[in-house]
Amino acid sequence: MERDARCIFVAKVVRTFCYGGLGVFFPIYLTDLGLDAGQLGLAITLTLLASAGMTYLIRRPAERYGARAVLMAQAALIAVAAATFLLTREPWLVVAAAMIGNLAVGTGETGPFLSLEQVAVSRAAPRERLTTVLSLYNLAGYGAGALGAAAIGRVGASPRVIFGVFLASGVAQLAAYASMRRDPPRPVERIRAAHAPSRPLIHRLAAIFALDSFAGGFVLQSLITYWFHTRFGLGLGELGWIFFGTQILSGLSLLLAARVAPALGLVNTMVFSHLISNLLLIGVALAPTAWLAVLCLLARHALSQMDVPTRQSFLMLAVQDHEREAAASLTNMSRTLAQSLSPTLAGWVMQGLSLGAPLVVGGGLKIVYDLILYATIRHVPLADRR
Image (cartoon, rainbow, N blue to C red):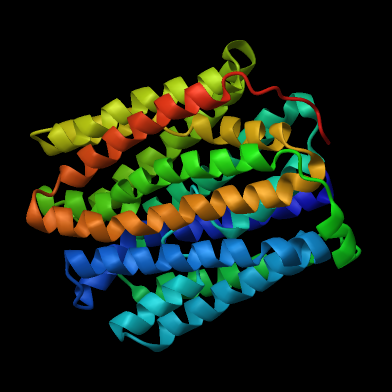
């Protein structure tokens, strides 16, 4: 891989290690600060809205100045967020800092970092290895996230240690991005004049991906953590190991995608693995015991991320090279924006109906997404547009 790709892999690992641990720790920390289920859902919604706003705002600067400068700015914001966590225990100031640090996004990521990193990695990979390289990119995130989730069980509920590590990660990411190649600025007139033949497809995909993310907002790791904690009384140590297992299996599913996609095709691999995983998600909500719910959750994660590198490869190969920033930014923004609407709804549903209802709603909507996506993209031609 080129130097830029190696720097991105380093930053991805450092960032998602923290996201993996904070995904387990942060919702419990917020409840300790006094937030109830409805307020927790609102807090997650606000962080997702902030991530969507950042994803939208970075597109033009990235097209003009390149990914390096924008990624460095995002890493600096993580450091600012971590410093704020260390300085205050005021609940809504903590939420505001989480908005700055993209804290609700998690190891899978749908925000500004992914929008820029997937384009840079795609440009560094040959056509025949693109899905494999993107699988490894996502695997690096899930593997680091798994270690982060497991580490939470070791350090316990020590906010200063956890937030101190998060601050160090922001500094490390800043250094990694600073090592990337400088891109020469592109004139504004050239950017505006560029032809965009794939724009209609990008807009359709953005709308379809938004449905998937809206459904995903009902089943964010933070909400599933809260569900297990409240429904079965599982503690921080047990939850850390459960989500260590989900991250490992998610990572293995990424490797499986790279193996399966050449035989079944990007579209078939993307859709049908996702469909089965959503049936298992509904099984988590219906499980009468903790061990059965955990088993369904682990089985789901063994398949759940096979669609990620295949979806990213499909998007990068379905558009022209100069459209990649726009495609990644618009689709990731729509995903994050749609996902921001559902955690608050999920909190209300948990309070008004049942704790497991959001998992059933999320799984059902994701199945609808799978069917619509398959009908839309199965005949879209792909080519090497690098």
